[in-house]
Image: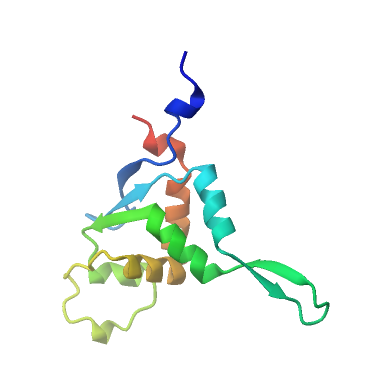
Length: 135
């Protein structure tokens, strides 16, 4: 008899096309409840409340976004600079070739997650949608 511990996996990766941006697809990893909880716990910091002088635990948003980006988005392809204007406000004058591809890097993922509500919401919807990761 198989035990659940032997067959449950914490992560699986799929490639998903980003809606409305032709050719832009993102490699998304499923984030299990266990992994999600660990990311959150590892991103908490304890500070002393100046008024009550009692320790208070808070989420360090920057640390959480960085940790989440590492596990949730493992790559992308077809992401053009011209697509940025659909996701965030950009300095168009700084973009020499709008059809050039934005390189995948952890730093670029973190910037998009921090500054694009659209991208952040979409990634969060994808990583917790178990149907996307079924065989």
